[in-house]
Image (cartoon, rainbow, N blue to C red; front, side):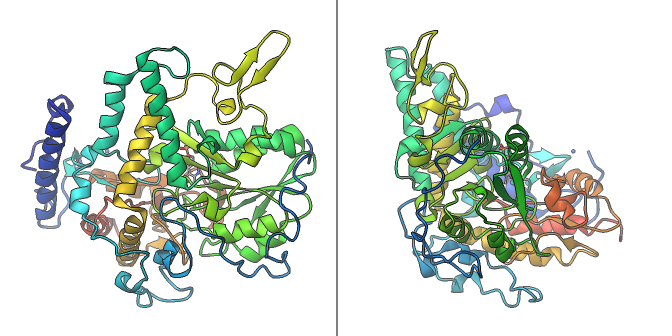
Amino acid sequence: MTTSIPRPDALAPTSPEAGTALIAQLAKELYAEFRRGSPGTADGKEVPAGTGTSEGLAGAYPTGANPVTPPVHPGVPPATSSASGNGAAGSGADRVPAFYFLHEPGAVGLSRVPAIAHVPSPSPTPVFDVERVRSAFPALHQAVNGRPLIWLDNAATTHKPQAVIDATSQFYRRDNSNIHRAAHALAARATDLYEAGREKVQKFLGAADAREIVFVRGTTEAINLVAQTFGRKFIGAGDEILLSTMEHHANIVPWQLLAEQTGAVIRVAPINDRGELILEQFAALLGSRTRLVSITHVANALGTVNPVEQIIALAHAHGIPVLVDGAQSVPHLPVNVQALDADFFVFSGHKIFGPTGIGVLYGQSKWLEQLPPYQGGGNMIRDVTFARTTYQSHPQKFEAGTPDIAGVVGLGAALDYVQGLGLPAIAAYEHELLAHATDALASVPGLRPIGTAVNKASVLSFVIPGIPAEDVGRHLDKHGIAVRSGHHCAQPAVRRFGLESTVRPSLAFYNTREEVHELVRVLQLLPKP
Ligand code: PLP
């Protein structure tokens, strides 16, 4: 590389504008370098490596209120109504999941995939300028093991745009204070920023009310919160919680803990060989003892996009509420919780270009107002005596102690950034990239894709029989390519395919075709299996 990577302190800008300009310049130089081919790659050769009870549930959804007939044959429930949000609302042709049809079942290659230009688009989609987007992400512009970093571990976590870094550091530089308590200028400012973050999340998800947004540490804590509040209140011995085979451990273990505490039973809806939920079997598992469905929107190990609208409609037809794990969907797909009619929706800030340590539980008010507190402490109380304590209403009831205020500020900046690009434009760009990458990976000798759902987002899991996934991961790392190899905290999903681990590149909107080509080129350097 002719461009040297500056030390982090050399990047310290004299002003936010100067910082952005410097990063943009570095980005351009490094990326141009990468596209020309760095030393040792131009000739295509390897270079040496240098990386309870059922109380309250009945009647929540009046029987017959939903047009879906219970599960003789589930069919496809009608689409739910639209509402404003981050672009998900709408009907028919403007449904973004249309972008995600990769392969018709049984189709070979991509010949049957409509070109992206032919897919009806909700509105004229602006050209997605990936070079400009990349220049906003400082961490993408570094060398790893002597090669330009290619970050394909986005399902694990995403990098942060300068706007998020600036917003967080500005908070600590200028606005830092605890919230809700002291009556002074900085406390008021910090409180305003924190509550503005809540409103940003409300708008992003299309929630009816900002009070339906609870800040937590991440998806994991959000699911644990629901398990220990909703679960303890509404789920008793012999009651059932319905999950699917493709869940992340974060959507399995909290329910197992609850089952140990209450005697509840976990049921698991199976998936087919493409990694898709078998909707008929899911529907058949909805019964009179089912108290909750908890299901992922996009499966982290397989990339499957679940038909959550249909899942929710089917569950609601039985009066059963649904929690949607949106950890892997919100960075890639427009979501509108009112259009979905999700009872609970959870996601993590760090997977959507925001900070670690901050996440969101959305819950419909009708649930949140019934649930007991999760943790006790400051902020969540109305009045405390040793005889009796009364609580705030939601969301404060669930936010005991000092929250991650800077995290909320950073998350708000991340959502602003993503919405600035536009989820429909992101989905269209990523769809094209995913289809291209799926096709390109097929040229790697022996490569077996794991998770070939018709409807997919971001994830390109695979194995190369004869070469352990961890070895493939290390080989890629030597070339500056970051992917995850292992079970991806989804052991039941991976074991469904007779495996203990896979290699998992996962895409975000800042990835490029050139990076995909480099991934394929480096995989082709592996010894033939
Ligand atoms: N659910 C899904 C689908 C995930 O992919 C992940 C993380 O990979 C989680 C839950 C847990 O997220 P976190 O570790 O941010 O709490």
